[in-house]
Amino acid sequence: MSVVIGLTGSIASGKSTISKMFKDFNIPVIDADIISREVVEPGKPAYRKIVETFGETILNAERTLDRKRLGSIIFNDYEKRKQLNEIVHPEVRKQMTDQRDELKKQHKAVVLDIPLLFESGLQHFVDQVLLVYVDKETQVKRLMERDQSSLEEAEQRIKAQMSLDEKAGLADAVIDNNGPVDASFRQLKQILRNWDVIQ
Ligand SMILES: CC(C)(COP(=O)(O)OP(=O)(O)OC[C@H]1O[C@@H](n2cnc3c(N)ncnc32)[C@H](O)[C@@H]1O)[C@@H](O)C(=O)NCCC(=O)NCCS
Ligand SMILES: Nc1ncnc2c1ncn2[C@@H]1O[C@H](COP(=O)(O)OP(=O)(O)OP(=O)(O)O)[C@@H](O)[C@H]1O
Image (cartoon, rainbow, N blue to C red; front, side, top):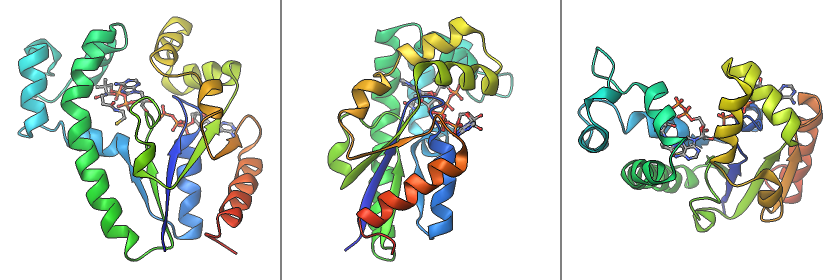
């Protein structure tokens, strides 16, 4: 029996950092952010719907999506965000469940890295939910440093998601990622032992 692990957190909480650690255990990771980029490439159905809905001003000169511009529209506006989600999310879900079912056949565990797992109510896609947690101050600081963004931009993005404190109450296990990376790695190892994924 393969265990399907839903890896989640909030923006800049450290999902990608933890996600890379699964390689050490030979556990494959399916990344919703990567799939959500693939399904909006020019020529794909979701791309066409996005241009129809948001207009050509959200395109770059080479006609790919101007992600920064689209982000500045949707992170400011709940209704627009909902419209974009309704176009992109069904495509992402289909790809993720197909890959999950294939990988389950060959691995002791499979990870679905889904930033919006709780917001989208996707708990039923997975057997265990693993949350990467940081406190609000660390989150803002790491987000601003990584994306070279202002305090205002960082707080706006954080506000577009459910708070990490609320998510912590819903998860099966939590990694506290406020400390150094090796401390988070040790927590991950213990959790995988508890779930009988590793020895
Ligand atoms: C708005 C877009 C173009 C901005 O692109 P950008 O390259 O700046 O950001 P990126 O895609 O790398 O996302 C970064 C993080 O933002 C957060 N985020 C992205 N989309 C959303 C959303 N619709 N609602 C809340 N948070 C979001 C997530 O934590 C994500 O990890 C892009 O995020 C997008 O297409 N979003 C809709 C699809 C989506 O929900 N993706 C996230 C999970 S499937
Ligand atoms: N334990 C840690 N100590 C110091 N820096 C960290 C730690 N964990 C992550 N970081 C840094 O914090 C930033 C955010 O981490 P990461 O990109 O892994 O988050 P994420 O949850 O995947 O973000 P997003 O949702 O935006 O994709 C990165 O610059 C990363 O290098």
